[in-house]
Amino acid sequence: MNEPSIKRFWEQLNNTKLIRYVLLLALGWAIVQVLAYFSTVIIIFIFAGILAFLLSYPVKWSERFVPHGIAVLVVFLISLLGLVGLIATLGFAILSQFQQILEQAPQFVEYVISLLDTLQNILTRFNLKVNFQVIEEELRNQFLAGIGTGWTIFQILLTNLVDLILIAVVAFFMLLDGKKVWDFIIKVFPKNVGRKLTLAIKQNFLGFFWGRLLLSLFFGISVFIVFIFLKIPYALFLAAIAGVFDLIPGIGATIGITLVSLIILPQGIWVSIQVIIGCIVLQQIEENLLMPRIMQGSINMNPVFMFFALLIGAKIAGLVGIFLSIPIAGVLISMFKIEEMQGGN
Image 1 (tube, one colour):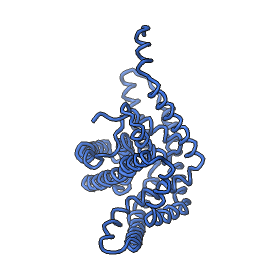
Image 2 (tube, helix red, strand yellow):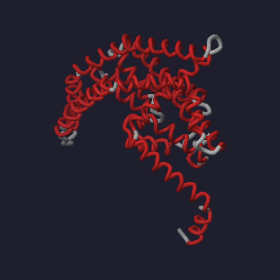
Image 3 (spheres, helix red, strand yellow):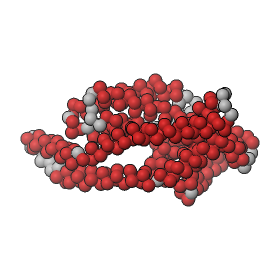
Image 4 (cartoon, one colour):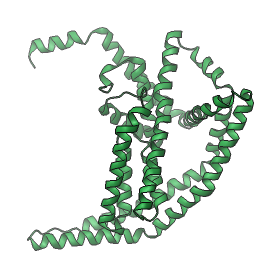
């Protein structure tokens, strides 16, 4: 780079931009430290806020007929009964299919190893000496470790019932008096900053989760219908995996599709290919037809910075960080109006 180019670069990087980027980095560092220190409390209140936001729509509709307090109580109780009903039906059915898959896990490993042995024999015929024994041994170890991790995650979910109850209780009181609490928090900021922050959170944070929830429900239900049509075993559990991973923007659906196709690989390569084709078609329908309409006015972020935020979120808070990283980054981009980090609309 020649001297005039360097001079022009520093002229473009004026003091205002430099201060804005430094403040952005400092704010990001401060947020990371706060999240790490108060992670449990913050996660409970964030998910309670998301739940309260989702329930606020039926509450507003119910307020046309009954007072606010009664509307909140009725909507909350109906939602609670619906959740218990889903757990008692779909939840136990998914758990049962998950247990069946774990019981057949050794067969899956042996099937993949047999494919590697077949590949090795084919390569040997062409005088290509390849030894897959190390890969096979590592595959056994990693798969067994993955099963242990899956059980560990499931046990953690069961032991965190107290946190789930706290989330429900906090969400209930947020529905009752959440606006007063938010108005109290906003008083810390200047009026113009408070308005911008409220708008940014509604568009990027709450709007993001509402849109992703609708898209994931569409993807999970449509995948389940396709699996039933293809007579895929464990259709409910596999569709649940696809729907949950679809909550992660960008790469989530791809990860879910890949994982599902690997799980059903013992059913045959052709069956796995059919599943991949069907899921990709549904993914394209979701991304090209539904997403532009459902996510309109929500997060506008460059894909490069989106993946960067996902990696940072995963590093800080694991799976929870993955779900929260994109809306948090969207709020920061909207607040600081960083056009370079926005997507090309």
